[in-house]
Length: 369
Image (cartoon, rainbow, N blue to C red):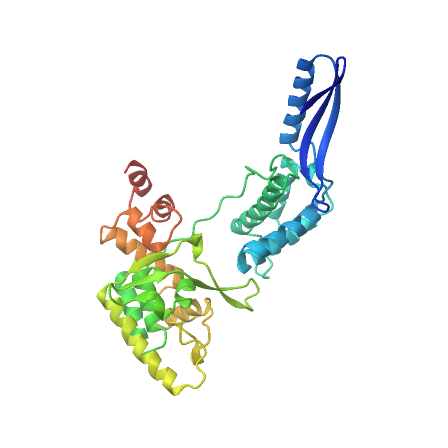
């Protein structure tokens, strides 16, 4: 905004945002002597400096920003998202806490990310922080700075486009369909058989299975409506029901054999409920003994023990999901888009990337088709 204050005298007024504590509007003022064209050029220079983050609305430290941002996250995001961000905020606070937000530079952030690659693991095992952990810290800092931009504290986000260490892709599971059938057949008659069978024939995530309710099963189709997931907080102390990953519910159709396994499991569970007073969660398809909520880490622990007893390579619940997707693409002729929808991936392009080892040229096929 430019206002004439006298002959060849102009005042420039730039809106900087609001003070986070008082809510008052904050302005940057400047005076220019000369023509109106001179004033307009000066205004453009000030606006450019604002976009570069050089005109701070408030003298906010990174620690103060983190406190405000985490309070916002706690109110508006899932508990696990808050836990993950709060975990990363500890390192961000240690590195930049006393620094003013508007003084934080791209170079400082890049040096910090580089230094994280030398930090030891926190679980006591040998080695340094993984590329995935470092990427999580970068995402947390970027999210906090994006919040600062939205609130008008910064003109731009200095955390954008930083260089991160490359992530190591995990080796895909090497189990054959015969080994999978051997594993499931050996589990028949145990409380894990139905859960592992459904996982291997639907590709549901372990949290989606642990959060599955009987009312989510449409027996007429038959199909499962995947619309919730059971999750743990970061410390593994508290279980809670949350949204599915990518926040998109989906329908997963069942083959007749999987529907029969679920129907038989329902009958067995009803008999167990009749024998067990105070069954805690009759609405859940899969539970721990006594109807207690089933921790999402337990099925993989038991699956690994089961595979080891049979002399099979180690196997996780995520491996069952991956084997299912691979089988659909490799042997049943499903399209990448159809598999992406069934597995609940964010995009078919992500599916093509994950299963590129299964179908040579899968990414090119998706992009061309």
